[in-house]
Length: 342
Image (cartoon, rainbow, N blue to C red; front, side, top):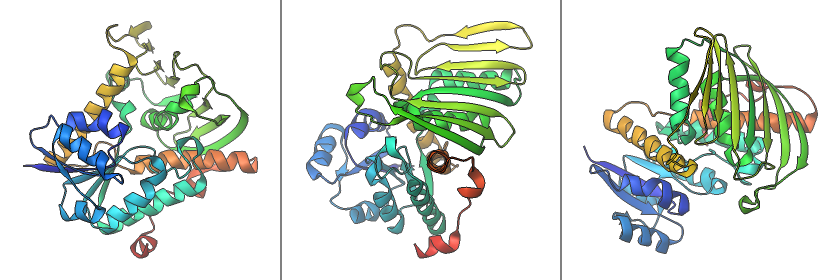
């Protein structure tokens, strides 16, 4: 079976993290569209594949799947058009929607993302999202430890997160602790110790109550230095505790049954950026496997909407100075009547 994968937007993210791996897959045929056609032609000259001059031409090619790798500010517009054109599957970069950029997600971004997924559902378009931090070696090892050591359910957690990793770490909280029921948030002062990222956003501190009764704190900041760990996540389970630090940091386990403190480290010839690059290869490889097998995607796009749900609730809590009941005020359930007329 030959897979026809259309790449929509051929910028740095696509060139560095997606196309090199896809080009090594013998059963993958590549096609490209970019608003600046010369960029798509440059990529095609390097990696092979066809160039399309419009999204209509992309849809007419009848791709197996389209990877929407645009800037987050354009993702809604492009995604909606592709869904209306009838493409069967769309794989989104993260965040799902962020009209003003990923450091400034709004309530409207959540509603826009919901409209897009509602329309995809109504049109029979299968959607997926990347969230490649789930494919870091240490994240995979942590999930395996939860199962193999029978740590039980999460009781509480803490998360200290650089805004460069913000949406990913919200997803990791979902990945380990499930859905969020209630959020109370405060906003601090803008901080920035990573000037190369140009992220100007005020610090955020949120208290979360999960659907399963667990509680946690989430602190987002641009104030952490780039050369230091960009996130630290600690999950307390019924029978132990896990600590995840950075893209390649040490994974620590406090095992309640063996009473041992274990450290799991990646070999030192492997940098955080090696981990970052390989996580895309693993994420895209897992997605291709589901296309070959006709199975659901590894991470459905509803997880991207779930992440926006948390960000929208944080913004509302800060603006209105009150706790927000997340599932009531930002429901995920799809409105098919609205979708069919969108």
